[in-house]
Image 1 (cartoon, rainbow, N blue to C red):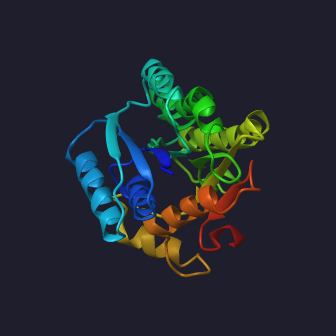
Image 2: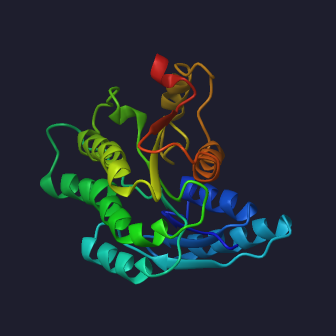
Image 3: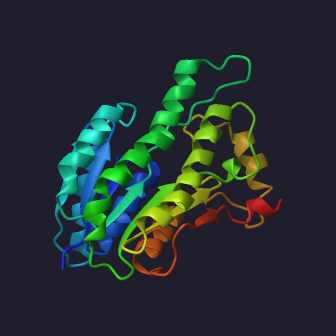
Length: 249
């Protein structure tokens, strides 16, 4: 039976890795990105190819979705609520450096809209579709948080961390609202995809504090997403750290 996953932020980095991992295992995909540009189309093409390498033919669609536009988010949800859906992966995020003393209301509000309010509205709108899933354990939502929103804050990212803390709370609160037909869980990564402009010395210093002595990769995150969707029918309301043990130091 076909299975459909909706993946936000699927054009690059972790979202792209999730799309390819699910494609390799036969999932149909609806991929969203802020703008439907060449990166999104390339991810879609690569997902079809990845499925083909496993002898599978899948349906892959792409759709532009600006998560900072909450009216557009609600419209997207209304359109797709009546369709079939088995999994929703919330990987899109805004990660804006905001040094204390120079935080402005517009930036802080945008972080909250993209990282917390849009996910909430998407889950609410798509819950009826997910509740109809025949997956073992019911439909599945996986939301990407951040370990630094769990008690190890980083300087100069207060609005971002506030929004990810709200996302973690959403996972717990909605687990009660969605059960027993839909599971919702979170992943709190350390570093699984460095920002493009991260200095080499910053990367080395961070990795030296990780017990497994390396940063994570988008593929590490993607494999965990698939496992949470397919292999954890009795887990809901949980945020799993994906940090190589960084939390312990």
